[in-house]
Amino acid sequence: MSIRRVSFRCLQGAVWVWLLLSCVPSVSDTQLAAEDLRRNLLLITADDMNADSPGWMGNPLQATPVLDAFAATAHRFRNHHVTVPICQPGRQALMTGLVPHRSGGLGFNPINSGTVTLTALLQQRGWFTGVIDKHPHMKPDAEFPWDVKLSGSGKNPELMRQHMDQLLQQSTAAGKPFFINANITDPHRPFPGSAQTQTKQATKQETDKKQGKQAQRQQVAEQFVGRVFAPRDVQVPDFLEELPAVRREVASYCTAMARLDQTLDSILQALQASGRADNTIVVFLSDHGMSFPFSKASVYRNGTWSPVLLRYPGMPAAAVHDEFVSSVDLLPTLLDLLGVSHPEGLNGRSWLSLLNGETQPERDAVVTHVNSVSSGKNFPQRCIRTASASLMFHAWSDGTAQFRVEAMSGLTWNALVAAAESSPQIAARVRQFQTGEPLMFFDLTADPTERHNLIADPAAAAQIQQLGERLLQHMEQTQDPQTDAFRAALAEWRGQR
Image (cartoon, rainbow, N blue to C red; front, side, top):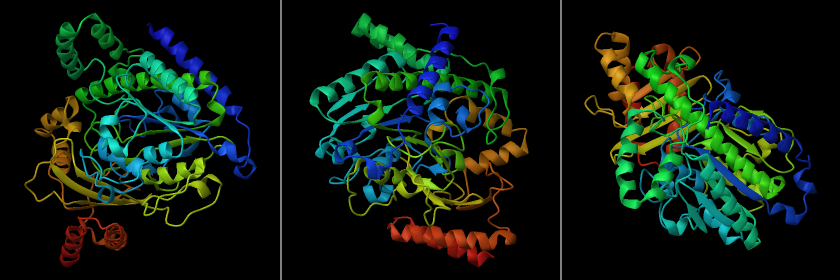
């Protein structure tokens, strides 16, 4: 497909999204009849999309016209942070409303048997439940009882349309409202055109030879790329270094972002064609930040920062929300919008009053977590952040441990390591990420990219003490297994003052 054709298709998508969503009637919840509360739910996730990548968040590249058009019609939670910035534990936290040490979903392992999930709650109450991709990251199957599980369309806009049509038709045939979780697997590595993609493609071609032509056609579709960005087109995010290899990899990432937008277009087009859009709650978010250093799998700002878009039938005018909210809040929020009671013991709090223009206490900070990573190794991290400061606890950092995650694969990390040989500034940045320090405090007003650790600065002591007490209280209340270690780190810090 030509770039011109893809661009026109995305423009068409943006126009119909605006027309569709601007026509949703403004009706308060109190005016809805009981049967209208049996709304549908479409939960859309992106895989590894940074918060500042879409146009609606200010990115001048304009790689996401369909997403930006949808954002204009939705409630926009700009200071939403995922409670875990890693694929499996992050999705399991979202689906349970629980922090990871409460659900048991600490890393790439199943949640505890008997833990209540959004999938189970809605299926038990009569919703058809369907999922597209990423279902291996929601385990065990008994707690995630999807009626239908589909795979392979996360980076394939055309196949995604077929999968959405299939699930919508099956829910209609069943005479049930639907809960569909459509997971777009862009812009997860490997990026289009990268060496990682070429290696994966070569491996798959060998497999295809054994499986026949049908598999070969599927492989071609999975590599579907429309709009392609060159290094000169893009901006390197401020938290990374301006190096040629970094710029090349960011360009490949942006190409994946454009494909994400095409896949989103397919999802929304299918919803519109089903005739059920007017009675469907639509949520969009990324599961965490981009797969680069100081983002995915870390509690640095770009790892956990993931703005949420939420549109629902009868809602008040779309608004921007700057309160600090967490992904564990989504489950109680969606249950409220669906008219389903909450399970007991949730860590999340519903946003319903925020959606109605009210305020909520203690929405000035958010706590985030990392435990084990995709390699199976434990790198425990905690962070409490506000608009002006962040306090991080790296329980793994002892001066000798070497942090290693999937986000350090590819061009960028290797370029940083090479540049560190001649640049003291970059060498310090490499040490910060790879070796770390147990306690790190950042003044986000002066240092929004979290480069300068002020934990030993006497002028920051009062803020560090305050945030430390708030984080400790959260850890105690949720029975965090890292509580004693954090308490000891705080005590050592006080003794060194």
